[in-house]
Amino acid sequence: MENIEKGNLLTTGKAKSLYESNNPDFLVMHYRDDTSAFDGKKIESLDGKGTINNKFNGFIMEYLESEGIATHFVELINETDSLVKRLDMAPVECVVRNVAAGSICKRLGLEEGIDLNPPTFEFFYKDDDLGDPMINEYHIKSFGWATEEQVEQMQVKTFEVNTALKKLFSNSGMILVDYKLEFGDYKGELLLGDEFTPDGCRVWDVETREKLDKDRFRQGLGDVVESYQIMAKRLGVI
Image 1 (cartoon, helix red, strand yellow):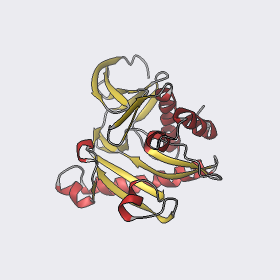
Image 2 (image 1 turned 45 degrees about the horizontal axis):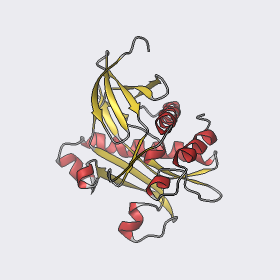
Image 3 (image 1 turned 135 degrees about the vertical axis):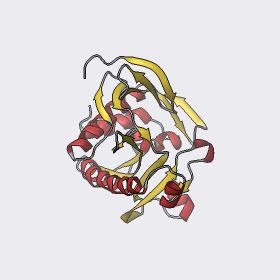
């Protein structure tokens, strides 16, 4: 698109900032180098993270569009900024798990690394102060966070993403362990919003099961940006 100008700061999250643009239908999403974990309790700035996440997200969103999954992504503007459609976001996170890792192991006493067949699906309420508690479709509908139709669409679209991305990552020598998605309304259409980056998914090497994602930051494993870059190179992002 032409003549898009970054306007006033709209919101600031843990690793991204949203700016208004001179077109009310679009926003500028800025990826910062900031990194956080445990609902913002662990924070650090990692050089180059914003750039790799911006490019990674653009690549994934364009791939999903090619697979028939509508997203809010429009185009990359520069190294750290992307143009996106302005959505009315549902305060809900949709999580699919192909392998047991993270919070599900703690909640259910599972050993990390167990293959989940079929994959699990979970809803979470997006609220850091509450620790993003798990919810179900009845909570979403009762509190008006999304309509019954939108709830169904979120589930269907999240599994469509899983089908598309599991194959993409597998063909690049990686296991898509789990991920979270967020959705929002754009002029009556439910679109995939927010981002798909190593910050919001777990990815392991298929041979060694080495962790290449944000767990390297959570667990103090080091080489966070370097691992993001390895993932990006395997996929053909960079």
